[in-house]
Structure formats: structure tokens, C-alpha cells
Amino acid sequence: MSDAAACVGGAAGRRLSALAGPALLVGAVLAAGLWAYADVIDALMSDWRHDPNYSCGQLVPLILIYLLWRRRDVLAAEKARPSVWGAVLLLFAQVVRGAGLALLFESAQRYAMILTAAGCVLLIGGRRWLWHLRWLGALSLLMVPLPGRVHNAVSGPLQSQATAGAVFLLEVAGVSVVREGHTILMNNRVPLAVAEACSGLRMLTAFVLVAATLAMLIDRPGWQKAVVVLSSVPVAILSNLVRLFVTAELYLHVDSAVAERFFHDFAGLTMMPLAIAMLLGELALLNTLVTADAGPAKSAAVVDADPA
Image (cartoon, rainbow, N blue to C red; front, side, top):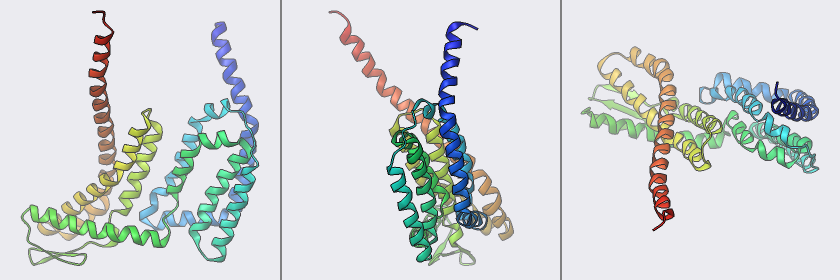
């Protein structure tokens, strides 16, 4: 082994050794936090199992662990500088949890758990650690189902929009459509109810999670990552409209049982790979546009640099 390789290996070893102590402390605090929030975690897991709109939330802890492992070298390079503000944040988190218990507001207890984790990071590692993990904290919010009022405020308009979009696509396809609320009567004989489960909220939460995870994994400028995450919303809405349209056509021309299987099984499996492909295609397009814009500018710079 060369001296340079030994030097690099030794430096990496020292960084990981420096991280070992704080990591053990974080592990101990994490174990204590899991015990303290056991009831909150149990209720959260129950929602993941029984509410299809938020079933993708159970993937968030696994994604967070992987992303945290990817950042181990960055954290090891930062010396732990405990901050007293971590204790303040921990105290605030317990106040939020107490308010949630007193007011029977379950979402407050769940957000308090995330605040507690952030407080522990700040208390043990300091502000730099918290800064490096800020986007993981934002991602952790996706594992918590929306509060009831927010859920209703989002799902209602999504359901209406899905119904209107399905009506438009069916009319373009030449189907006679009469809309009554969230029920569509096709060719005056086949009714199709666009229930809350068809609103697309489930697809929206899944697509946002996929886009946010992809943004954290790719090495792109911040604005491109923001475009990927923000574009996941219209991508999810359009994908849900396509699924509704195909389901309606199957109801009309094939069989209701086949349509139900398509909507809940086949389409659910195919929409996610389609969304990932669309996001990757979007990244390729952004890369092409940026390269095309940079090309003329670079050429102009070279021309200007040439002697007369």
C-alpha cells in the first residue's frame, strides 16, 4: 500500500472514529425516544396499514436511515458542538406533545416526535449537524398523515378536479357524459362514482415521496431538485386522470369487475414506474436545456478570449 493511500485511509478512519462517540450517544437517545413515543409510533403504524392514502409513509424511516448513512462522512468531518438550543427545542417539543394530548390532537404528538429528533441532533451535534440533516427532517414530515382538516381541504378539491378531468377526457373520446356531483353517467346508462379513494391523494403522497427522495440522491443544482419535487404534483394529478379515464372506458366497454381490478391493482403497480420514468425524463430534459444554454455562452467566451 502506498503512503498516499495509507494517509487517505488513516484520515477516513479518524473521521469515522470521531463520529463513533456521538453516534453511540445518538443511538442511546434514539432508543430512549422510541420508548417515549412508543404509543405515537404504534398509532402511526396503524394508519400506515389501514389508510391507503398514507401507506407510503412506512417507507420513510427506511429511506431516512439510508440517506443518513450516505451522509456519514459529512457528519464525521464536522466536529460535534453541542448546543443549548437543542434543550430548548426538546422542551418546546414536549409542550407541543402535551398540547396534543390535552386537546386530543394526534397530529401534534406526531410532529412533536420529529421536533424531538431535531432537538436531539441539535443538542448532541450542534447547528452544523442540524443544517446537514435539514432535508432529512423535511422528508420525515411525509411519514405523518395530514391532519383531518388539512386532509379534507386537500382531498375535496382533488376529488372534484379528478371528476372534472375524467369528464373532459371522456367527452374528448366521444362519450356522452352527464355529471352529477362526483358521479358520472356515461352514454345515459353506465354510472361511475368518483369516490374519495379516486381523488388521487394516495398517488400524490407517493409521487411527492419518490420525487423528494430522488432529489436527495441526485447531484444536481438546487433549482433542478426543486423543479423535480414541485413537478411531482402535476405528474401525480395527470397520472390519476389517465387511470380514471382508462377505468371509465373499461366500465363502459368491458366489465365493472375488470375495471375495478385495473384501478386498484394493475394501474396502481404501473403508475409508480411511469412516474419515476417521467421524473428521470424530466431530469434528462433539464440537463439538455442547461447544456444547450451553456454551449453558446462558452463559445462566445472562447471567441472573446482569442487575440484579434
